[in-house]
Every structure is written in structure tokens, then in C-alpha cells.
Image (cartoon, rainbow, N blue to C red; front, side, top):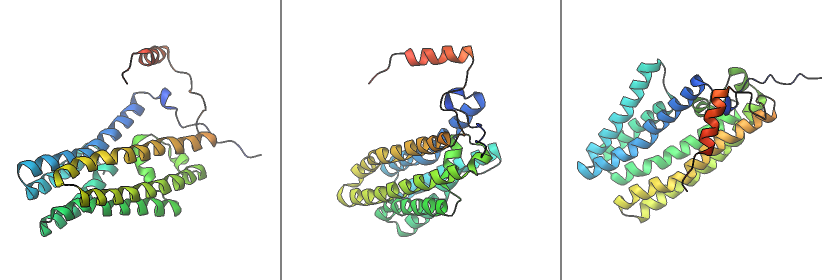
Length: 240
């Protein structure tokens, strides 16, 4: 009879300071490396023009990448990929001075991301797992398990479909809307797609790992102080 996997993956309700710090740093890296550049480009374009906006976005991506590298001693997956694509996109935009080409470039990035995620998952080295690990602490032996690899093949296929849809939607908006409206509409239109992809990535692999026995179905015991804190959070009034 085969031994069941050792339960070593923590339920999020049992996270301590170190685990929540891991999640917080990952979320900050995502915001600083992926979302802020959109706002910088919009403000720069409206205030100083296209070339300055491109340089500002590139400078911001470089700053985020270098600050994280200096603080941790390693490249962050969010800021590094954003900076890499920003360099290529900036070079194409500045060389052509074509705003439409610059704004259409992320559609190519979407396809590159989607194909890379799915292809690497089929080869047993899912790149998408790097993003998941940045947001959720996963032990090395869990990452090496068949359940982990199977889960990320499915999730990577979903990302390929989502990124393909995002690329087509962006090109359609760019072709049909005025520039000022497009910058806002493209950001807003991407929220449901990106949010769904992040939610699936956070939920599905953990469900599969729980089924494989790497995580308890119910949260492990927590301290009295944590129980009080959770009770206060769950009973607090919320807005719709």
C-alpha cells in the first residue's frame, strides 16, 4: 500500500507572519510591476507626449526591478518579465514613433505568455508555477509532485485561452476606440479576464494538492489570539 503524502502545505488560515509577508510582497510586486505602468503611461502621454511616456514607463519598470533585486538579491518574476517586455516595447515604440504599434505590442506579449505557460507545463516545468509560488509559499517537494504538475497543465491551458482572448479584445478596442477612451477601456476590460485567471490559479492547484493529501481539508488548529482576530474580521460589517 502506497504511503499517503505528508501534509506540509499550510492552509491560508494558519499562516503566520512569514507566510503573510510572502503573500504581501508578491501582491506588491504584481501591482508595482504590472498595474502602475498603465497609469504612468496615461499621465505621461497626456502631459508630455508619447516619447516621454514611453521613457517613463521603461524607467519605472527598471526602478522596480532594481529595487527588488537589491533588497532580495534575486530577480522577481513579476518585475523581471515586465521590465524585459518593457525594453522591447520601448525600443519598438521609440524607433517607429508609432503610438498604435506601441499600444498593440501587449497583444503579442499576451500570446507569448500564453504559449510559454502552456508549452512549459507540457514539458513538466510550468513557468506559471513561478507566479503561484511568488504569491503562495509552496515547499519544493510539493512542487515536484505529479499532482502539482497536472494541476498546472490545466491552469496553463486556461491562461493560454485567457491571454488569447485578451490579445484579440485589446486589438479590437484599439481599432475601434479613440486613443484616450482606449487607454481606460483596455484597462477596465482586462480586469475580469486577469482577475479570473488569478482566481483560477490561486484555487485550482490548491484544490488538487488538497485532494492529493498535501493540505488538510480543514484548517489546522490556530492560537486563541488568531481565533479572536478572525472572529472580529468575519463579523465586521461590509459594503456591497
